[in-house]
Structures are given as C-alpha cells and as structure tokens.
Image (cartoon, rainbow, N blue to C red):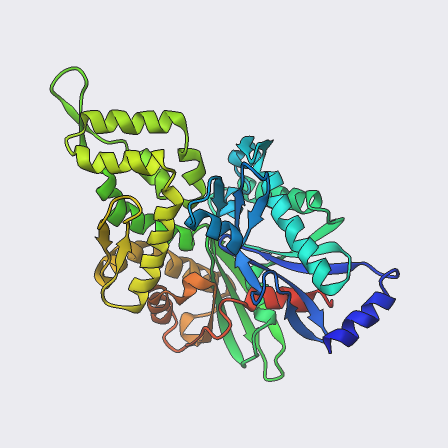
Length: 424
C-alpha cells in the first residue's frame, strides 16, 4: 500500500505541493502524512515514530544532535550543551536572545528551525517526496494569561517553519487533530490534551453516523513540565539548600536563600540560562555563608558540573514511577553518592493536586463555553503523556461522572489526526 502510494506520488510530484504534518511538542515530536485515507507516522529514528524534542550541541564536531541521540549524549556525560522544552520559549523574549551553542551564536528561533528542518529532511528521505508545506499542531493557548504573547508565539513558530525550509505553514488546534484520529461514539465528548507545556480542552458532539461538531475549545499554559517543576521544588531543591538561611556577610542577621535560583533550576526551559558564571558565583557565596553548607555545596556541584538536566530527568523518571507504585524515589546519585529523594504517592499527590485542580477547572470552563453540562458528557478522550497521570484522570472523572475515559491513543492521536488532515 505504501509503495503504491509513493510511486503514484512520485509521478505527480511535479504537479502538486506536498504537505507534511508535524506534531512539534514540548517533550516529543512526530511527523506523518495520509496514505490511502489512513495516518502514517514516519520513522524519525530506527523503530521510533516519535522522538524527544531535544537537541545537543557538540562543541568539537559542531554538530547538533536531536532526539534520542541528544538525550544519550547528555546521559553519557559528553561535553556539550543540551536543550529541551524549546516550545515553551515561543512568544517570549528569550526566544530571540543569542547564545553561543556549538561554536556559533544562535537564537532559539534558529535552533527550533534546525530541529524542524531535520524532521523535514528525514521525512523526505523516507518518502522520496519534497515537502513544501507544513501542517502543524498548536495548543489552543501557547500563553493563556497573555493574548498578545499567545499571538506572538504562533508568529514565532511560523518563522521557525519558514526558516526550516517550508514555503508555508498552516496551524490546527491539537485537540481538534486528536478528534480526527479517534473512533466516533455518539454523544457529547471532551478531549483533554495534557501536553508537556500546555493543557487544551475541546468539547464536541457526535451523531450516530460519526459526524462531529466542535462546540468549544479552551486551554491554559500548564503541562507535564509544570508537574516536574513542582515536584522538584518540593522534594529535590531542599536537598540543594532551598529554604536554607543565609547569614549576612556583615552583621548577625539571616535571610532565606533566594527562591528564584531554585525555581529556575527546577524549570526545564530555564536550566540552560542558569548555567552562567554569575549563577555559579552566587551559589559559592550561598555555600560560604549558609547555615546548611552541605546542602548548598550540592547546589554548587550541580551548577559547576552542569547537572541541571540530569536532575530534571531524574525528577521526571521519579514522577512516572510514583504514578505506578505507592513508593518511589528520585535518584540524585549523579550529584552525590547514595543521595535519593523519597517520592511516595502521597507526596506526589500533594505536589500535583493544585495543578490537577487547575486542569479540572479549565476543563469545566470549556464545558461552560460549549453550554454542555458535565453530566451529559459520555466520553473523555485523554491525549498527551501527562493525561495518563492518575491524579489528572481522577479529577476529570470527578468532573464528568458519567463519562468513560479513553486513553487508547493518548501518545499518538494528535500526530495521527494531523497526518489524516494532510489529505484535505
């Protein structure tokens, strides 16, 4: 089937432009197209149709590695600069700041563009087609509290696609794409797309023939990386001196260690900005005057040896394990031998509950916009890795007590729906 499709498209190649569907995510990305009415996600790496939205700059070869190769380079301790959660920078001034990466001065616009260009190149190699257009997913709100910044984020992402070599790009709301890839069920439904950086909700109605009508879409800037951040602040950062008192260099008074440093170290997209000489000097000063110097010495090590991303991966892994078991822990032995932060299910719930309740509240707002009572919803479609968190599912089930929870295609629904939409 695929061979016939590609052969036919090679014949028509000169006659029409081809569109590549791209699900550019905060944590993972995918690309695909429609093949004979079915979605086909292209292998971006051997045996993998999705890959981490991560890059690694090697200062010696000047190469930019992406996906699992970037993650392996970080885990293996290779010299270089690792970046993740780049999507969260869209619409912010940080996106346009120049940084020295791999021996070049680059903005993050160019970094994202090179990531997208690599997806384009791999898709073209796999299909023998030339993709001149992109159909990109986007959250309902990149920035839910600032509509000007929200509009700027789409403008920024468009610029990234154009710099990547696409002639044009069209955007589709990610939950609406997910709906296209989901088997129809008659009644009212709610799509809850909880991604790495945003949460989106779409309310829809389907009839017996499977015809869908979108009634409302809503969202907020909150996702899996925010879960990681909150867990890190509450369970890991105290091991590095968060909350410690710092003695005044003159006099006998004390003041708490600055929260901002620990908050930024716990935030995926800000970790590269913490890696700076002035931050390391600050950490050394805190350790010198801190009342808990051993803890602050760990902070110095994290910054001196650029372990911020290693710690963030450990938090993410601990979160996933705690979601599956009553007892888990966050392994911090890369900072200090035998150092681990306990993460029992109760602590996970305590850290995540305020965020999960925000998700429930915004899902309720989406239902209100659609004028659909929660009790009439008979299906909640869960999309995104963070939608699989138990506490998120508990809150959504409480909101829609008569609905079944459908998580069958949680990790691929957006990419598959975008791929199907390339046939339009």
